[in-house]
Length: 292
Image 1 (spheres, rainbow, N blue to C red):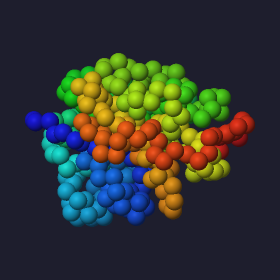
Image 2 (cartoon, rainbow, N blue to C red):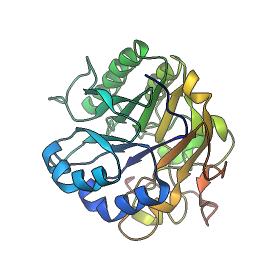
Image 3 (cartoon, rainbow, N blue to C red):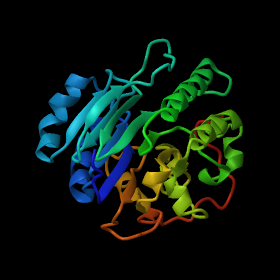
Image 4 (cartoon, rainbow, N blue to C red):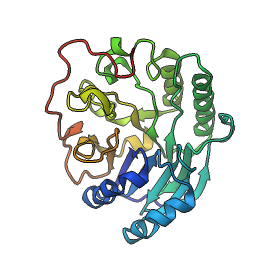
């Protein structure tokens, strides 16, 4: 398949696509992404199509879905082609049934994966073990996949301590444990590049902020939404950033979109987070809202 140039790729955990319609459609019109990976859609496929099928079609998007009622759910939107659609991760466990957490397709010559990795809940819990086994199965799938590939989504892992507002606040929590990070490194070892961090190695960058305790306004977040690019695709990256504006205002998701521009950057190489936060972050120790 011929490679399509000038492609904008975005990933966004919308935390219920039904609730986010008033934000999603204007955002598509503003940012004009060519490929969009959505997570936590929380809709069965027929309900998603009934809700957004005509709106997305009018904007030129083909759609691949893997949804379920109320929980999980992923989608892949493309206006640069959408072929060889695959749902799920071959060999991955269920909890107990197979959950709607992965959809992949070839878009503009690139194999794109939209992923909603299991949360893990608590270290050493059954859900945590499920998360690690799911990631191991994903690695096996990626190892035998095409050379041009993008892994996009809510990975539910902060790659390093630099990707959380305060490492001490996360002691005893998931998303930051060594086994989780090792599972992510195993995927990167296949030749996948964390393009946002590679481009901005020392910057404060988050993509998720808890709704509670004013975490967003104080910029107390985590970077758990990632775009990982195989080397041929990473070489095409011209901009990589978090669209923090989409986390502001009325009725936002608790995640912000991550955007990567291939071959050309229509907005320029504008920085790691757009717009930058008004608060520099906590100046004193902060407990996570879920901590007792």
